Length: 142
Image 1: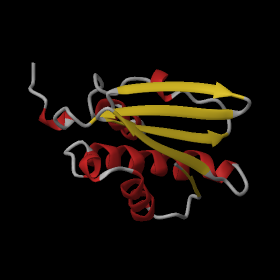
Image 2 (image 1 turned 90 degrees about the horizontal axis):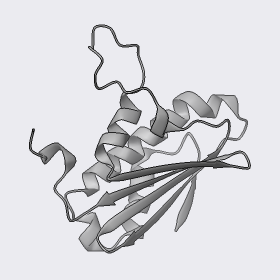
Image 3 (image 1 turned 180 degrees about the horizontal axis):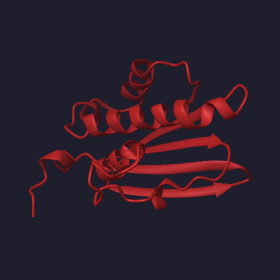
């Protein structure tokens, strides 16, 4: 299923769509919170960094599932921006790092797999979240 989203759409309406697109066992999984955070951060980035540059801006969210994995596909028309090559902020001290990038860091950290493509003016970010694993914040420190 794919949903067209405008910058004015509420995150709660987007998440309600995701919940209807997934079977109950996925929605009730601990990793669903990670999905919600990823979607919220992506929507915030679209509103903040892209929507103001393009008239009648919309982005699309595709949701699918298979074998315990939730797949989110984010697409939007605009300049090429590969979030998988964004500068890492993890190793930067909070006192010295520039503002921005925390949303991308969260998306990357909470995802089990992240792929990006750019074709014919359309950015596509594919995210996979394995529902059989513990939430990322519960992973043991090494």
